[in-house]
Amino acid sequence: MVMTIVEKAKRAKEAALILANATTADKDKALLRIADSIDKDRAQIQAANGKDIADALRLTETGKMSKSLLDRLKLNDSKLDELILSVRDVAKLDDPVGKTISAIELDTDLELYQVSCPIGVIGAIFESRPDVLVQISSLCLKTGNAVMLKGGSEARHSNEALFAIVAKASSEDDRIPEGWIQLLETREDVNAMLKLNEYIDLLVPRGSDQFVRYIQDNSSIMVLGHSEGVCHVYVDRDADQDMALEVCFDSKVQYPAVCNAAETLLVDTAIAAEFIPLMVKRYQNAGVEVRGCQRTTEVMEGKNEIKAASEEDWRTEYNDLIISIKVVDGVDEAIAHINQYGSGHTDAIVTGNKERARKFLQFVDSSSVMHNASTRFSDGFRYGKGAEVGISTYKVHARGPVGLEGLVIYKYLLVGKGHTVAPYVGTDAKEFTHRQL
Image (cartoon, rainbow, N blue to C red; front, side, top):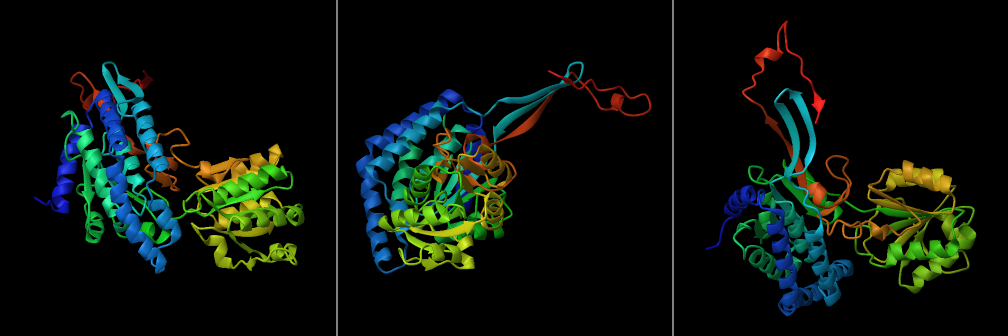
């Protein structure tokens, strides 16, 4: 029998109450079963993924889908290997549930404990990348949260195959309740999901700027995520040139279709004439379209041809082999540019000057700020979180790559012996001890 979205939400809510109290051992065993099942059922997963890719290729050929989205869709052996490893890594991580954050004695035999606990039901909405389904569900399982997943229609077959594997493998042992993971299937389900504030406690959208903003604007449920990834690399006058070439290249070219790829390169005017032609040549040899400010085009006059950058380029997340270059008068202008045009996601400086690096790290207002390292390191798996539900540019609850710690909240447990408030109010009020335990 096909369940309605409300019935799926009710079932997830019921399962969340049971899953919240599952032991660490039971959750870890379930995660290892999921990893083993993905490994064992590779052929099934890739056959389903092949159907999605065939459909996507037709859309790409007609201009209805970008090549970057097509790249995100593919589940080759190396992606599956990384996915399996990420699930196993989540199983190895400490369980964040049930940790005592603080303990205080209010009075003799009256003790207050702040204890971490699951959020409840997570609503995850994502586009294109089917591996996201496994990453999010593994983190939710480890943190005792139920999850309702809605992937993009372009990955429908892949999502269905992965969902079936995760659901079956996790609940083979009845200690993990069936129904903790739910898959939504239609476009209409997204709008219906946004209204399920009675059942869903947190929404995690992953996709384009327009997509995430739509989720934020059309739901009263708390939303955790980022609307775009306009990331920068600033090459300072004291940068090692060979290092800068490698970091800038990796930040853009290694995987341009993701939110932590660099979109704008800022170059100190003191080294612009020497560095920019070398960098542009390397970019163009890799098929990158380069757009530059007026000073950049002047540097490149008579050399490799580039396009003029517009004001809009400084605000654009390309997610493609395109980069804009701007010449700036030192670290202060670089910081000002990033804080004005960036999205608070990930930004990097390449320099051998420790004072300038420290200033950049302190004053750039982004969730991840890097010194002499590629922006592509901004990732939950690379940060040792096993996986990530997404990257948050918000400044409440969780920021940057969100792993297990972003999927737990806390509650207060007060333990007394018949205590009442009355003795602690009035003219002869008894004093609280407020002693740390």
